[in-house]
Image (cartoon, rainbow, N blue to C red):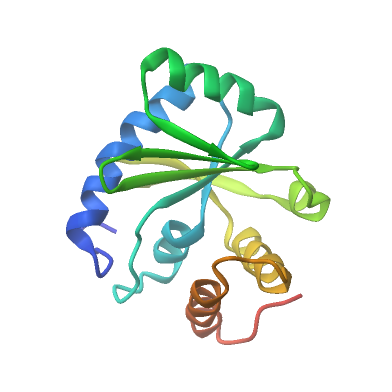
Length: 166
């Protein structure tokens, strides 16, 4: 992927620099995580028309207290909202969700592997898991990002050459 950038390249590279610091904190504190969302979609589709505005990660439910403690200890600003954490640095945002919370199908089926991209070794959801995540998001009647999810699903379906599997 060297040289390949999403539509918002300048923001994306600043976001990656921030992510590198945050993920180093995760790793130093033994916090298992996996990257999904628009970063994963961009990684798999290599669609330069996509924008990657934030990086979405999931951590195990049991890891949240340790993550919050680690962020506080290091003075990393974050906001907690419901079951999510929002770690910010200016315009850069790492959004942390918890796997195993509410959706046991996803918790049981989540697959990941380490990919090397943009100078980072990232635990990334598999394409199969990304498809499941977007299928579940599409079916969620209370999704605040419904329009954005529809656009992401359209990109993924175009890449796959078929509709998402339920």
